[in-house]
Length: 296
Image (cartoon, rainbow, N blue to C red):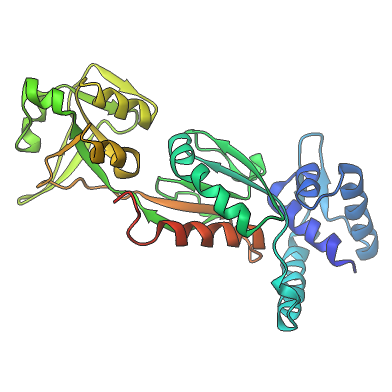
């Protein structure tokens, strides 16, 4: 039984696309399809259902998958035991991340990542939409939202601290609130999906819904509107830390911390086989951001 055929089959179980799975292993669609055919012929069973859009595992394929993963894990453990496992990971790593965070913090880190792992190729998609990892054929996603899909595994990369801020110009013209209750007296800029603001107070949790004439679907747009004196806004510290350092924004309501269950996560499809290229990507960014990220 060919180990490369097994690797392809396992990746196919995640991507549901022969072309994408083959591309990750530097195989053409024709060669990838031929490998799956040979694996099926050797086993004497049909492992996948093929359609024009995607493939899915048959009942026999589902039964065979954990055994294929075990074989690959055993081979990799054996190679590592004799030193062969020290080879650098290779292939194409497909990544998706929020547009603002990707541009501000992922892209600047890639020079160091590729210097450490020069045999990897990167395929990046920056979007604020929550994409389907399996349908899109992605290996890993960076997200700053709660994990709701139980078929995915999450590793925490860094905290996602959020603060309320305003520009010195806005504060000079209109003042600033002393408590969250006073926010209704100010123009507030909203990030879509974050219309309710929750605070820790001496009397417990307080949730308010501030009013405002401006909202946007992009964190950098909200931040820029705030810098331009258009109102008060919530923003993640990773998005505004440089503006705070330059004095373009000022944190307000610091005695009333925002309540948020978000963090920055690396998300990948659940499988007992974690591809080395995904593992090194996650470990690199955990190391880079650390428990106390540079933006905090």
